[in-house]
Length: 308
Length: 308
Image 1 (cartoon, one colour):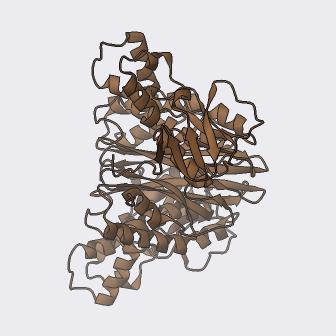
Image 2 (cartoon, chains in turn purple, green; image 1 turned 180 degrees about the vertical axis):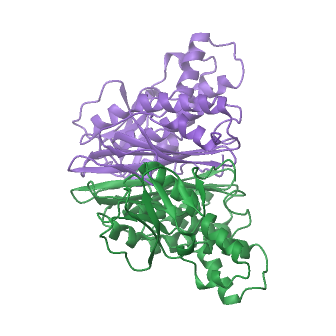
Image 3 (cartoon, chains in turn orange, purple; image 1 turned 120 degrees about the vertical axis):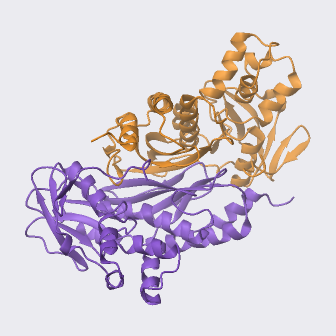
């Protein structure tokens, strides 16, 4: 009996990662997770579509890695510990080379984010990847977008704008920047690092959190809306990497830092007394009111998936 | 400020269903579920692609209903109690009429399967629906495909072949069957009923279970492989509805019952002493060996998503 293509696909995705919480992984009607007593499950899903979220000829490994890390970043934003993921993969054809490279990206992301692959579905159709991630947190002890209070400080991890710059540089040669800086920025786009450890550290400390996936202004607007507060951002305080500072067009660099997405840093609010964690920067304040105030302009809306 | 299309979509899917386990639903970075102590989480994901799993002009309500029920059926097959679902919806455009009808299907399925909508993602691209379902079961007490033992009886719920016949009849007028019978069969395709109550009843009773989504022979082959046993099916014992019995081509009706998918009945194995639940039929036996033996032929493989 010849091996069907579906069996072939199953083989690529068998045994990626492991965790003591996983009782049943890939292969039955459903996966089974058992958490220690007193823990809640957190779950989020993210879709990436060919031609919308990535180019049709993008590296399969990068498609897999980025989609998984983007989903894992939602767990980071809630302060959850990663427990497992499901992969719904729609493919126009079963190309072994493409699948091997994609599986390599899944494996690398699984290892980096400690997210074992516990289930999924493979279907035929236009290339689309949907990743569902599961995490855990002590009952009642997770971060939300909704707890910021007037008087809190607005903070962000890492640096902003790198991924947008990296995406731009991936689109064509820009000789006005050193190859080392270009490689750094491109890596920030292709291999994002969700702030999973920071998210767990912020549990019980930060009053609200969100990950910067749509861009600083847009995600700040989500946080402001869910917390029913206003946010003021000091543009001069926004952390910019040395590589992005070296970019010859400072206005463009600043625009990427304010509006570029895909950095997967954490934007969070800290009460006055709380210590700012390492590698984080205070960039503004929480006030009564609404919207995000920056450079004399108030931003109210978030990202619209049908307007980009 | 004009309401963005994304806000419009959010509005359609806000507040569908509710459950005491859901601490945070749609709207934050992740949903949060808390189960009573001593319970495991079960999770499964299913994708339906336009042009592959449904016609591009199919009723949006039916697309939503069937995709959710197909996913819920995986919970039924594990004996899980439904707790919530996430909906990843990829749409070429935000058409309000289409969205309203789709949301109606989501709402009806949510109610029927007691699956509140707790999260999701909306993206632009070729029409694709991925539903992730979460359920619960007492720790260590759920059904799998892997526990059938030689000497067990092979049983199935309801009747088989109805959905395949219904799909065929939906494709064009077939005047050789009464309109009442046609309506019954079409309804079995368009509005499948996952056997959620039966699945929970079978916990601790059945030795193995799977839902009949790919067709009796294919799903029996999955169960045989995961249980490392052989299965013998008595074709004369397969339960056929009165509507399907009335179909003028008995060979075709029998073929639908053996190979037609989408019935979402439960196929399960019972130890010798166990009482057969209501509305279920014994259709064969479990033996040492491998494969599915029916009508003198042995079937080894399952469904191949790239061969259909």
